[in-house]
Image (cartoon, rainbow, N blue to C red; front, side):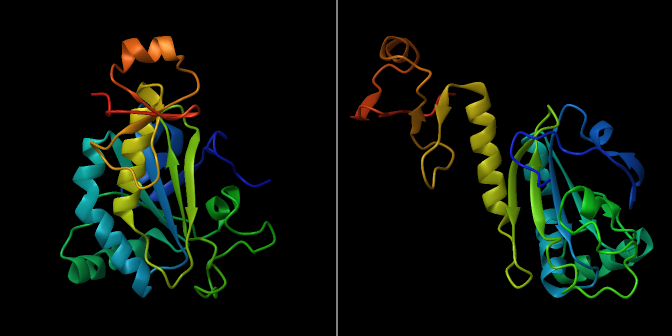
Length: 218
């Protein structure tokens, strides 16, 4: 069964470039961003891992931990890290999960159950679906999934934007409109009556009976 938003993210144990982890324990009380790759030493993925390395402090400022996964061995990941630094100029300080038996790729429904049990002999094309981003909340539930083709590099500034939105809307009875970014007006949810809106969001605007906007709460 495919994973959906609000499903509990499957827990697992795995070897990483930082040693063995149990995923839920590793997340702790943080948000987590798990992003996967079909194979080591692939061009688009090299740029992506470097981009995340450059943004790791931005994720940390939001209480979010980042972790990569690639369908190869941890030893290969460790060698790949030097290439990533050469290309991006950023040291990869976050962990990268090894998944040589394809267990996590299958657990997260990125590969079919009959895909085999080894990374050996598999090409990036065979592993093409293993290019997904999962954002997981402190409650260990999936908050967002994004899947990308192999030829399109991921936009991690967008992941930061979505994190900002999800964290804001978790604290307040608001939603964010299309293309929202920090500081823009927000939408009041249907859970807020007009009477409550007068108290919580003084000066809010009624654009349509079902669409009310207000300044971003602080």
